[in-house]
Length: 528
Ligand code: NAD
Image (tube, rainbow, N blue to C red; front, side, top):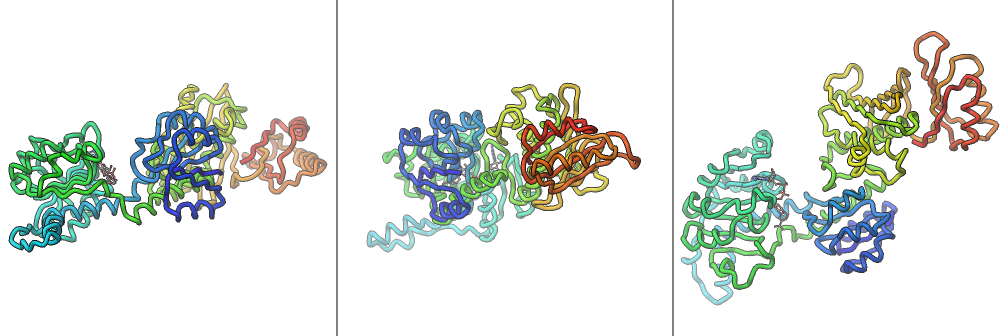
């Protein structure tokens, strides 16, 4: 796998990828035109806020499988074009959380104690102790708008300052807030009761101008306001007026409606506004973190594992990722088996998640199953991003259900695929990261780890059949490493299932010969 690093990222991230055997080319500062020229040679691309990854770059990236943004915003990447081509876009949302939260706390302290103003005054040779009387944080109420990653860390730190923390976030669970001892309140309650208001929401249609004239009017007198989320969430003109009127005691601003802000902007001229140039994420640690987060996801993809921080896929927590990993492989391999057994004809896919699995985010597993199925007919370019839209496009009906009760296993993955009047049922479970097994195919009990070269066949349960298969493979110098005969019922006879694990794939001729052997009903070869 070849990785192009098109912006400067942490050395640790580059070393990490090389250590895993990836070929990494470093071209920081590369232009868009140059990127278009060379992108066809790479499987992975890493950028920061530049260069732009346009639809043209994506179109030219014939080998491209993943684009990593070492940072949060993906505005410079055409995510839609990437999704259409099945390219995973990953970012590093958690990498700068603490850095930004610490800046917010820094701005609160700076605003409350007028630290930058006092600094300037001392450096000008003045000694104005009376001028720089501030306010304490202890006992004050801080209102956190948006209790996501950064808001949560700000709330945690505010607690250490003996502050009373209230938060408004309509999308967060009560238990998450309780965990921290934070009281979730309505937007109006927060606006009216907080001594300090800090915003940590994304900029959306809903949050643009979230705090404007009307909100400032209803705030407590002498409120401190902080924005290190995105410019425009707090309306700048309204903020200027509220500061001038004395309603707002001080403000801390890291982000602006236009960046850099107009040097003549009134906001920059107000004495009690502490400004910083969008440096929330600008710490050594954050830069290393975001680089490493992206590197890890590229390595995950390289090893065939799911990625953790895809923008065009649901994201997973570390714990969830560990739990789902073996099931992901299992689901994909079940898809491969089903497709091979049904000869690529499938119209309806039913997945049932039982037991502990039913409590998890299983959307990845359904995607992996479809990937396994579709690869059979469309080749290896299907991935977790493209599998679902392609299945939809092809009119494949996908039905998912979750049943928390299981009889025997902690978790069970059941798959039923139908097509052209035929169907196949598979069930599997996992006992650890690399120990995932298929325990049933149709009515036949099996117990095998689906890894390697397999021949799956049905045969008549009568003497000599298995011997003839052994002779055929021996004659063709193919070693049989394992064999499972999944007998249905306890009496001999009938049709039975055979799984052969072979060291080398059989040629078409050998497979055809096997299909013609007396007693063999059918046989398919699958590389799992
Ligand atoms: P996050 O997704 O973890 O959290 C955002 C939270 O906002 C979520 O809990 C969500 O439920 C909540 N939310 C969404 N809409 C809301 C609404 N209308 N009202 C109230 N809550 C709402 O994001 P994060 O990583 O914590 O980042 C928060 C903000 O910080 C983002 O705007 C991000 O761009 C910004 N940020 C700035 C810098 C910087 O350099 N200053 C660095 C990193 C992130």
